[in-house]
Image 1 (tube, rainbow, N blue to C red):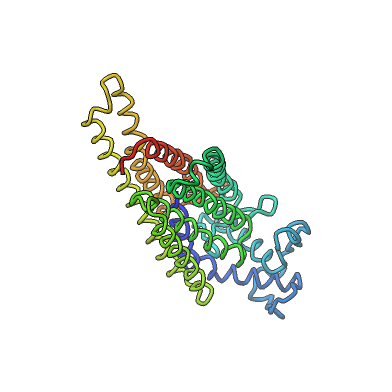
Image 2 (cartoon, rainbow, N blue to C red; image 1 turned 120 degrees about the vertical axis):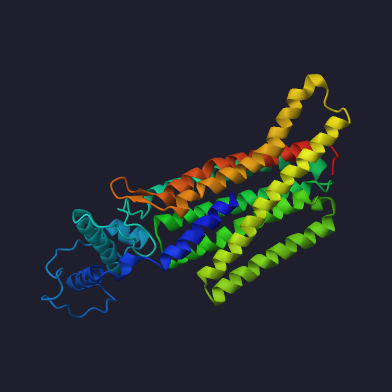
Amino acid sequence: MRLAVVVTLLVHCFLVTCSPGDNLDEFIDCTYACEYNRRCPNSQINYIDPETNMFHDIEFFDTPPLYSKLLFWDCISDCDYQCQHIITRWRIDEEEEIYQFHGKWPFLRVLGTQEFFSTIFSIGNFIPHYKGFVKFSRIIREEGDRRRKNSRSILIWNYLYVTVAGMLAWTASSVFHCRDLIITEKLDYFFAGLTVLTGFHAIFARMTSMFLYPKIAQAFTASVAAIFALHILRLYVDWSYTYNMRFNIFFGVLQYILLIMLSCQNYHALQKQKLMGEFKKTAYSSFKGQIFKLCVIPILLVIVTTMAMSLELFDFFSYEWQIDAHALWHLCTIWPSWVLYDFFLEDYAYWGNRQLY
């Protein structure tokens, strides 16, 4: 779901500015000692006092060459990583609270990956969007000649754009969780904004039947594209976590409202069919099935995704298992994406077979 990405950004924005581990005196001393002892290039640490710095005689490890070359772990960032775990293990031994550093829990690297499970589950989120892309592409190919002359082709293309934005967003998320760099963070945020806007664009166009009016639909698409361009420009000129959070939350919540409204719209259309006698007694099970697929499913998606947000609001971390609530949140967003695209397909097939709007 689109709002899944939004909540992720919301929590990340909060944690980035509120990580208590960053200000621990022992953590700062450790990084100074590591940079000094390893003679890190570009380090500004030229001296440490052995009498006040308890880490002055610790033997720090060199950065593995593979990590350094492939994932851009330089000496300074590697010192930061090593000290996070030195301090964390010390706090565990002292039975003290585990702290976050730079908005992240102190994960152990797995093949150079910073957040292994979040990376794996982000890749898992990519799959339903890719499957949706394949399904919608097949429909466009199979019905191309007929749909090309029909305004309804706009609808299926809108859904295809959603899948593309989703693939880009979860690819960026996978890369960002694999290695947190300025560029990977920005790409993660940019594509999150893209997927939120494309989702809003597709659902709004469907609910209002805007695709029946190609010129209006084109103007609406151009307006949404302009909003995205201005959004990127705003972040480029003045990067603001607060602004980015508000932008994504606004359009994400709008999507949920539109999904519920679309569910109600489908329900009234189905009830109208029933009153007109289009559902015979022998086909009542079909009527109930349509109600479930076209009316209940979108509401369930909103409810399930909203409930899963508690994983982000009540954050937790297991150092032993190297997993946190954020990773589990990514796991919980895989199923809704599968179901959402199935709903889009069911809704498209239903609308295509009956002129209800």
